[in-house]
Length: 443
View 1 (cartoon, rainbow, N blue to C red):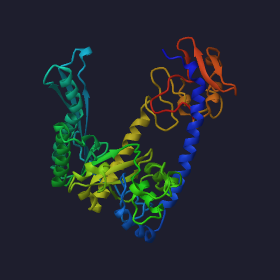
View 2: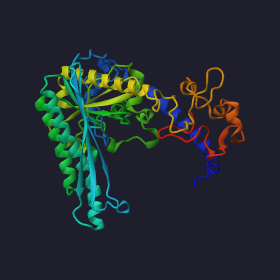
View 3: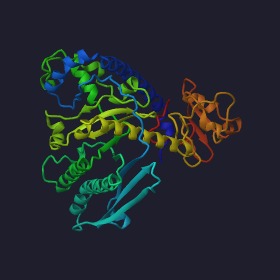
View 4: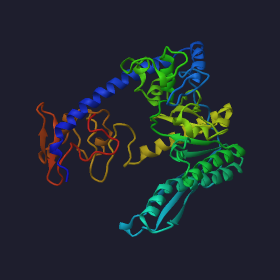
């Protein structure tokens, strides 16, 4: 049982700390975006320093300055997209499944402009566990994700081959990064991780043979590869060796931008449909980039794409990055797919179509409902789901209908803010109901 009255005051304090943090991050993001807008001549002077730098974090490299932008290329009238994504059910002796686990690989093959029927199916398999002791169970759980990854890559290569046979422009999409951090076997004694990395490299090679780029679509990226490059441009040392930095930690010359993320920076630099320059993610320094050294010729490149609702990180193999036509293909098809997905979500009454659109879960609403533009609407009415702006938590309670207000007893802070409300059916809760995953407690 969770008594929300015990943390009501702490929620308000956490909200204040979060607002301060966001303000600081916004300030550093604005500075990073300003630094990124250097001209080509100045950027060219930093390129050798970037290559010679010694850091414990990945640094993006590009011949063009980060602020260079490329508009959306035309979308081919006919093309194909393939994708895979897997899931699993882990062994659980409490559910009567202690000697096996289940893997399910979803497969998608879509054709546009041809009239061909799409493929939407999956392959499920029950994998038995060798042994019936706890050690065997732990080993199976540890290798389950790697085994699923092997299945995803195998299915992706198969779908790419079938789509390429139709003679159409094709991209093969995978959910997440092409850099298989989870497959990094530090001790060298995990065969499942070795098989997973080998499957990925095999899929990259198969895509190269077919002329089909394997694309990693990273939604909501938190990486800082480009920001790390900007940090090096701010450092007066030459060469830059962060392991032997002569500056005190409280006065680092690169500190003013270290909290910014690449996505936040490019949100200020790109317009919808535009992409950044193509960066390389090759790391040749410390153990943090050890996994990249195993890619050999299949080095990873990436760019940031403004798809409208977010800044996505698009990762492609190095051979595709060297071909401008393939980069344009990936740019156009990823943008088109993202727009189609956004249009589908906006038509669904149970999905959000914007950062301040209420998502209905059963009969409850998020506490982040925006305020109405004129007269109040009942929280379950259609108009309540399309309010244009967000209120403070204290405003939410006041915008409910009089009938709904009479059914609730508010819990106010010393400043008069509505922190909690009590309903006859659900007792004490945050204003508006349960909090959805990914939504803040405060605007």
